[in-house]
Image (cartoon, rainbow over all chains, first blue to last red):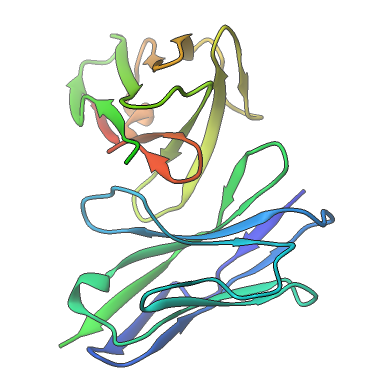
Amino acid sequence: AQTVTQSQPEMSVQEAETVTLSCTYDTSESDYYLFWYKQPPSRQMILVIRQEAYKQQNATENRFSVNFQKAAKSFSLKISDSQLGDAAMYFCAYRSRNDKIIFGKGTRLHILP
Amino acid sequence: GAVVSQHPSWVICKSGTSVKIECRSLDFQATTMFWYRQFPKQSLMLMATSNEGSKATYEQGVEKDKFLINHASLTLSTLTVTSAHPEDSSFYICSAREAFFGQGTRLTVV
């Protein structure tokens, strides 16, 4: 069975600085998708970034980028120029071929003004 | 963009009563809807997958008779918590596709 591990329950970063959230996963599949979701205090789940496993190029969305290491089964999220609005829970997630999404336990990110 | 509308956003009910949560896809057809449960400060746990026109697929450990899921049309999926008990109190979220989540429903059973 696939698993997603986020080893950092909480992290803090100074406003305008860069922070990297870690995620590792385990799977025997070769074709899958990886995601990072943001859940602010409103608890609305927001898709931040998406990576297709067969693509070697790391996905980027404005200030958000990933470091996808397929062989190491690692999928970290880098947030550049952190803003107060980035404070939230961040979930790493894996989607298998049958469309079921598996979430990690999450990392709570604090932004220090 | 595509939106999933979930109602109610919060509900308080008495033990033993049933509560229905609705999720509607507003501008697209959702043949599949995923239902999650989230305890405070924890991750989302998949409860079941509903498919339009067929029976829902439940995850291991989820009581089918307690959490009734219906996907009657391509735009509506419902989760009914039957004979609710305080331990059913939680945050329930629906999702159609990876990018479209409902706003969530906070259920409190007293």
